[in-house]
Image 1 (cartoon, one colour):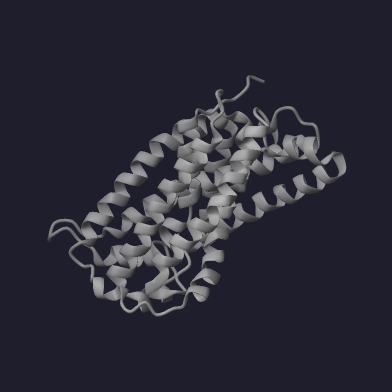
Image 2: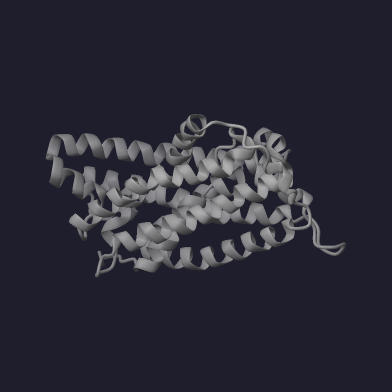
Amino acid sequence: MRNETLSNNQMISVLILFLFGSSVAIGVNTAAEQDSWIVVIIACLFAIPLMLLYSRIIKLNPGRDFFEMSTAVLGKVFGIILNILMILYGLHLGAIVLRDFSSFIELTSMPETPELPLIVGLLILTAYIAKCGLETLGSFSVFTLILVMLIFLFTIALSFEVLDMENFYPVDHGFWFMADKATLTTAFPFGETVLVLGIAGALRKPVRPYKVYIWGTAIGFIVLLLVVIRNTAVLGPHIMSGSNFPSYTAACIMKAGTFLERIESSITYNFLLAGTIKISICLFAATKGIAYLFGIKQYKHIVM
């Protein structure tokens, strides 16, 4: 099988969209209410050592994905154990995002539609992307990122008319409380990027993992921070923390004059696009891990 490659820019796009994933619609941890934006900043600081660690692992093992790295470094027995854990994590996280997606669509758009057809439809789409290969994923991610960012900037612009900066006052939580909540945000979504190591072997030479993770994390952090600030300013801390989908709820309030309403549909598009990429990465990681575990040369044969 022809070797698949991803450029550094394509990998950055994949990483950013993976960070967005379900966070675009669900938002990040909002238990700190009006102080949630501070929690996101602390979480990013906590995530920096993780990103540097992932980058260093790729730098020391060019041309290898996570599953090859683990057996080469830890030996066969411990490598297999770690690979199995990685496979299970990929399947578990993919299932969570699928469930988030189906619940979101059912609650916001199709309350009478059973969740199973929604899940099956998205599974078929992500399986098709995986069958097409990593190069297709990379090209699709670049195009998708542009579209997602345009929609995001559009919602930010429309929020100016309805935001209330008094929603950020007062700073009501102590540092240790916010640091505790930041650990959850570090795990979701920053820590989840460990699954990107599952496709790291496809990085095109010269391999520049620090560029990938630093730029990907920085852009992802800025967008997530702006999402939290927008949601807090538009909804207020209590409504934001009590909403299952704060970004969607905030978009319901926005409108452009009298001619453009129903802005919340744009959040649905972003969730669908970014969520598809995130589930695809989970599927890629799990499938490549299973193929490596059982010595199957072409992972595409077992995607479905």
